[in-house]
Length: 109
Length: 113
Image (cartoon, rainbow over all chains, first blue to last red; front, side):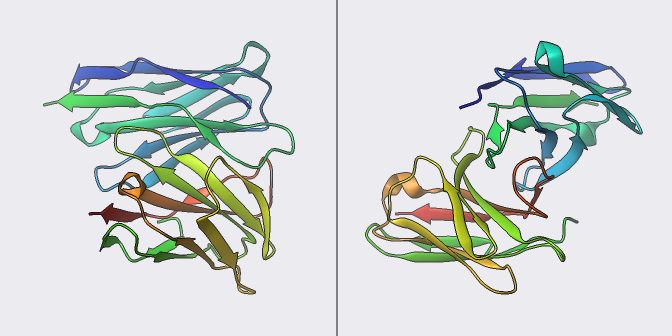
């Protein structure tokens, strides 16, 4: 099945800093989603982005499908951005999302 | 708010017992997927139900089973609980199979003692 790798595993920032999270995947995909998991375990959808670029406020994402990677950009980070960010992908008629191991983001005041 | 609800939120069981977790899908969605998330790991796919039929299964033993009802809500049943079954169980609903967006519930945290 598809392999998903995320980097970095951990990231510590000061409030106001910008960051880039990366997701590499091993094969072509028809679904790629970025999630933020809050401390209570809820997975919050950030982007559905199997290809192209999207922006939502301070967050944006780009997926380059031909090169099999996706990037999540967080600008002007806030303490509420802290948590684990997951990338997940599926391919073809395969129904399951395969998750990376996540990036633990800590934003300090 | 994803419109996907799970119950209960927390559960404590002892080894060997059986447990049933429930999930109500978002309105208009006919597919439910279940995932297990161990501490410090990413979610792992258990199985998916599409229009009341199992539509695929991950690497989990047969003591993990499920159902989907005509209103597309779903249950996850785990028999003969083991200590390693302690995890956050997440349910996701989507409009179809394959590449459709999956929306997750808040999860059920299961502790097996």
